[in-house]
Image (cartoon, rainbow, N blue to C red; front, side, top):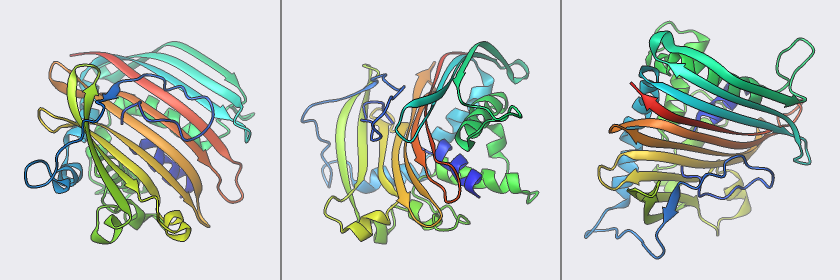
Length: 310
């Protein structure tokens, strides 16, 4: 279950203009979103409403489709990963440049460098975070995320995991049923949960060319400590293309400390257009994990995709 939930967090998830909450080296320094000063979206009867944004977040499928379409394209990728000590000093790193070919979903490693304390004596990774990173960004490059589209008809453990992943990653705001102490905490748009959040709207530019709306959901600052500690999702920010209301990215900040989990995670996912097709371009992650009876895990990574061609 520990490995499963870490995999969920590594997949969930928008613009790199957000500040880093964990005070250490951050590989994500690309500034892609610029918010207009004093440009606030008018909401209510004469403009967009909160429900417009929430309904789009819950019902959107284009974000999921963008990941599925990766397997149809030739593209290059650059992966950077770092692990840290308890004092947030770098202890290990992985750097890779890769080329994906749609013919047979072939993946070629052009350049690879590893450094530091990453491996056990048997050659396996020491931490679950690094192991899951490899699973996500090596194996899924080859499948193009197409296996996430299959229903869990066989009832296997892996199929069950994939169904949970689909809910958490591509349908934020819905409950992830079957995960102890977590499932209801992801359902932040219910009437009961809305009382704990503030909603903010703004306009801006993405990649200096795409006009966007930013819809930010954040925990209210005046909550009691007991209430705030029980809320897992501290922020969910979504970037919408003003022209067609498509989702171009998501940012999420999650923190929780209970008997089963103690984590502090920020995740960032961005999309861009390639010949009018929406495809993933950036995934960044910062996370600390403290699981009972297990060694602390601290890591960050940045994944970049570019040069998509059919």
